[in-house]
Image 1 (cartoon, rainbow, N blue to C red):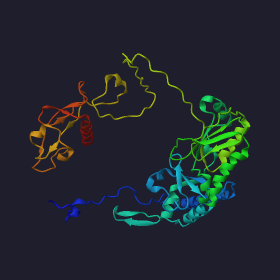
Image 2 (tube, rainbow, N blue to C red):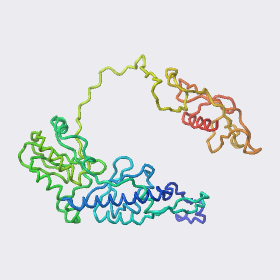
Image 3 (tube, one colour):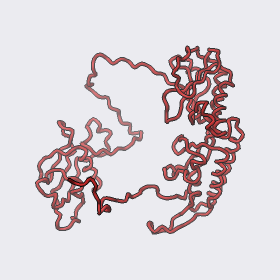
Image 4 (cartoon, one colour):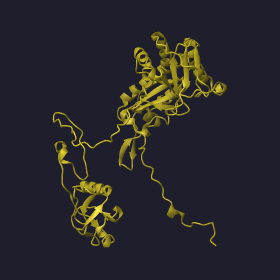
Length: 431
């Protein structure tokens, strides 16, 4: 009976160090532009001071959300300024906006630490000899690299949250098919009231100000969390009504109790304006959207679809520019001839085959590992021989979804279409 324990005496034969690719190291975005970096550094520190002043003075507490807008050349993940500047213990990243925009949670104390790190960034370009590249290259500190990756820093404000006017909102919500409620996405989850003691003073003040803000408006409304979460962030449905019983809040989860009877929608523009002003300026709100309208689709026709006899193809306008596509396939239908700039019927190709590939299987497709596609002359030595010219017939076979091609022994074989694409690509690269 074999032992269940085995001793491996040559583990090195089963281990292979993974090559860590990507990253590219730290980049100096202001290499040899020292004066520009001095001005850029001062501008960022001034922007942080302005944001810190706003956060310290706001009634909802010192917590706010900040947009860190990156330079176009710093959009790569390895260039994000999260290793030294916007660390998770100072200003954690809570989301993203447009391309190259990070959204972080900020406070005056955390922003002060970030400002101190920016101040440490050297103002002169550091140069170091790179043995791999064989030349001198910029070698910035982490502070300078991350500072240079930032275009500017802004406070997340009302213009980032809402894209519609009060009048547009009232007109849209007056349609009963919309549900008549705003969809409000938050930056963070609202904990149940018994768990508020677990929050620090700043975050508790942020949550309390959000909940008491609805009651302070004095309007009749329903505020409840929708059961569907997007991007793991809570979404609330806020609806002004005419029930006359104040604000009814269900913020910590979808209610399991019977909901109250839906009251009539309140179309008062002044009340909507005050509600939107409150949501626009509260830091916890990320986005305010109008709901969509769900409509029943038209029933399918009883008669099944029939293939049309004629197809209406677009006519090419030579006065306009269009994207250019390179298609390596079985060819283009003559119906699209007006759109074709150039085309070739086949590419001649030579395939170098190893001695192991020249056998009875030579008429079949050889895997890339068993053959190397090389142009003449023969670089492989005397033990390798050249096969006959290999031509790819670009005319598709109508009765089969693959392409027909001449094999190495001139007989006809079926080659899968995916491999034909790879072979055609190799032909294109070798010509």
